[in-house]
Image 1 (tube, helix red, strand yellow):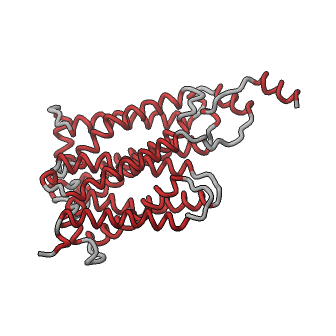
Image 2 (tube, helix red, strand yellow):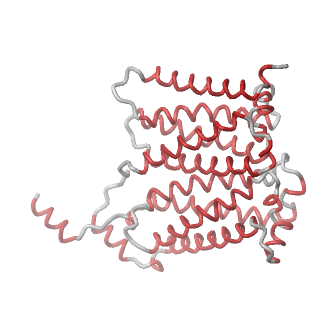
Image 3 (cartoon, helix red, strand yellow):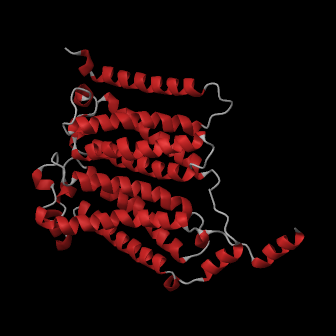
Length: 351
């Protein structure tokens, strides 16, 4: 019997590798007087991103002989279409964001914004992956290596808490410009008006697909799941869990963002839109890709005659939080806390 195929051995091997990564990272910075603890988190996940990319490439047949034993008695669900697309995202997008954050950190430059996008994306990965494994067809094939996913969830949650508690990276904007922007009504801000309408559309789409995932008996839900997105009833459970995560977590946040676009001074928009954009981008990438991937059974893939409509809806759903985050990041004046002009004038006179 090959010892590599023993589940406990695979867990021990993974734990040993992860501890080695932490130790090597520590050796690299041991001479530094102070090291941001987030550096260890970013370096750790940079390594796991490489492992995920290796898995994706092997599952799609581009390389061979690296991950077979690990998926066999470690994490067999990594061979599903959803996990393959998730692995590509981790190996390319997460890896790029992590290296950028590490580079900016080492150069003393701000990195909080890109780190918030990564944290939202990484948390979204795990809150779909873990329940999907437990409730789906792989629930009877849970091996000890599965519990490493708890660590992969706890670390980005901890990182997100640390990032949210740090000062925001705010540009210097004159108080008169802030006041002028905040006096504009929504109809005088066409970009914000379009984003608000897009968010309301995304809210409606989220509610509808949540009902579809919950097997609502309405004719519209029945038609949609059988004629447009049959992937939602795939027994791997990842798509169903994702729709419920959207319904119970993304929906309130999108509703709050629609409120933030109409109410001046909502400073929290600058952080939460980045976090939301990261999570929605990761989730939609995995969902769209898996629904057309060859590893998904043919009966669950999007029917070719409906590709245009379904993919358009999903890409619009993906684009909305991304455009919102870009709008808030590049032009934050509407969301800043106002300072009365009289107080500004008095401060200038004192100087």
